[in-house]
Image 1: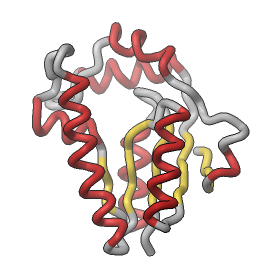
Image 2: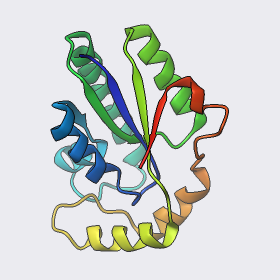
Image 3: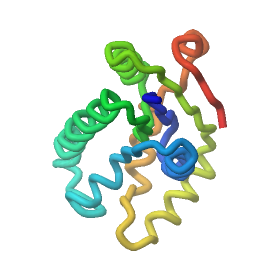
Length: 157
């Protein structure tokens, strides 16, 4: 059955690990922007180009995952959905496609996240996140609010 499973969490919260498990459990098609970025643009694309490159990747991914959903294939969106606006947009897309949305909310601990990022940065070919970038993005993260919970199915892990 077609469905959208989306991961909500900050950098280093374990989104991709969870998305990979869901991919196997659900027989779903997984969309992980970091993997697409690394494949297309390398592990550490220039900071000044990054926003435009990520927009391109998201546009390509959206075309693919919406097509998959219309064909009855469940999808996993490993995006993070850092803002209320991004979650509202996804809820609207799911409604327009007529498919259920499940939001998988991952707990966030900054200390653990920093450790995970440092370990990931040591892996060859992994999507690199500089410590300064983590700190720059941290205030931009908007956790799921209580009034959003009833708007879709929520699974906390």
